[in-house]
Image (cartoon, helix red, strand yellow):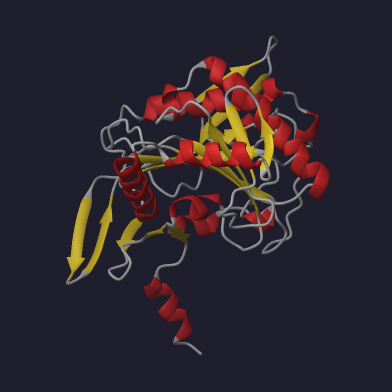
Length: 326
């Protein structure tokens, strides 16, 4: 069973999901399992190796372009019921959530530098539609979409895929950002996003790409080398409200940015994160959804980078039991 424990010192949350320790490791780091189209669960023809799909985008024939499936080793489960227990100041609870895999291509050896914007548009449409669907579940408060590319960025399967984790709480890091953005808007009567875009357009030193709807910059506050952030010029608070025309512009700039990064740095490990407004919040003029692409340096993944919430496969009690043997 998954447990969610709160750090009383910082307010951050740790999700303990021991079952994820049973995941097959195709990276070769812990186990020598060579991934190939024959044994890859995400390849076309191996659909019976995954849980039943939630949705798909099909091509004109009998094949598919994108499949969405439940994660076989989920961080959180839809079936979980809320239960809270405290040990003094130590708080833990269980709660319903969702963990889905977006398989971005049927091909095992996909070179994303060769893909046109329509490829990415289908992915963004899938993100939007899954958020819309999960939003109907009143138990869910926040959805984090992220991608870990390559083992050093947190991926255990090399086949191109991204993930969605729906949470029964709003992560502390997200709450903190919202508080700062609301305060900035209240003080200045303009969103921080609009102010940043204005500064970047004026100086032009950090702009990586630009089109009618979006601007991609190497942000002033970059946390990793070659970090790129993509902002809307005219903003929606929620990604689920984005119209198809905006997704076309987003796909074009995202495709351009990825080609630049890979041309400059090679097929690098990276984390992709999509920041969205929590379901618990009303549409806010101070917040726009946005994207970050983070070339990976450390060992954390996109979910950790995006939310400040860490996933741990070993309960501390088990860790202590093991350590006491030495």
